[in-house]
Length: 276
Length: 326
Image 1: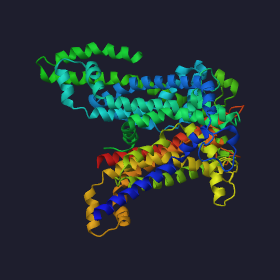
Image 2: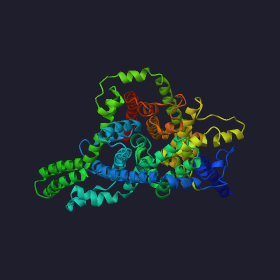
Image 3: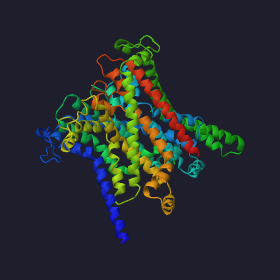
Image 4: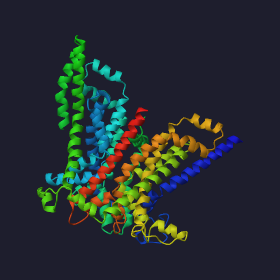
């Protein structure tokens, strides 16, 4: 009897959990709902809670108008991933395993770098890019966006690579492998999980970036999807189904990441904050 | 590109000294190996060091330089603006926007932190009970944190819209009149705070949950045997033992919340009439929001923000170090 009671209690908790999750995710549901709403129902009061007269007009507009923006965002995201991993994986290896003099200072600088507000970085980048003629260029934005992820990435790689057993690297050295060879053939393959975590976040952050995009490539030939949405809102556009449809499409990477790589995400969130 | 060639250039020396370690004189070769490891270490660190100098230190320096000169659009392009010392800072302090911006930044940060932490902690305790589906639901709670800020901000904008927003429709259903969430000066700050709390809860939940996991179950059992009820167990066991993690969460949250820009700018642009202006949006507004950009004062406001973020950042590092030692 007590067993069935604790079981029913467990279901009560699950029900409460589902309700809480529902409340939390209501804005996400609302975004999806509005993206399917017809123009003439948009200002209805009270609004339809379900897309009863669902339309794909919003998504058709996305296909017509937003594909170049999505393409640009994809290129920028992938570029930032490559740049971030290439810079931070070797650095993580050095800090974790080679114990350089001054490594502590560098780790500290990386930590401090994460705390600089993006808007300040954007203003500095703007001044520099203006002189170099790099405004409104995709490579320029890739570099700027990578600053969102590099310090975090070095910390993740360092934390992960510290866990690689020293005997393994010692064995490689005995076999005559230099540091570069050890890094490339042993450390990097073992650190696959860290590479995945870092790549996911680097991609997500540059895909989501608005500050750098709006300061560095605003009005340029290649603008990312965040600016695509921003222009939609700014144009006093009343087609909220199109705006929300774009928002849904722009959220897809986040959804994919959540489904495919949930454990990496949680690991990434906690890695920066909690020391084991 | 650059750093790979650099690494390769170092490789022969490293390989050679690696071979030398196999040769007899042990003391000398050990010393040599240490220096060669040092070289290798800095070769691996060189790219990121150069990168930090070019893309962190230099933009920060440019920003500082901007704030100390009298820039106009012309001199901004030509780079010959006269040095004016702290004039921009004086201008900023005397600006009628300064006091409201300071107040809004403080209120925004404090209110967001309190609610994010309280809600995050309540949820963490709830999910720590391991019921069916708890892991899946907990993962779903990450969604607001993963969404691009422009997506969250525009969704909240539409939900809070005065005439056709779902929030006002719900309020109407329970008999409360329409609230001009985004267009009334008395509500705009509240609106952006609500949206930002929604975005920040997942971070608090995840970090505090991982903190809860490290509290041994035996402590709860002992407390239960001593007759402590759930409420007492929370305040006497969970909360005190979670203090280190709480400190880290709050400090990191503080640094992150101070620099929130996207949400406010996209939802209200700091308005109406500066009613939701914080330092971050004010800085952007000065530098990029007008037809005639005021880069100098904009950079000055930004630097004040950097100082604040770094001060709290240092406190965070100290706390974390202390915890790492103990």
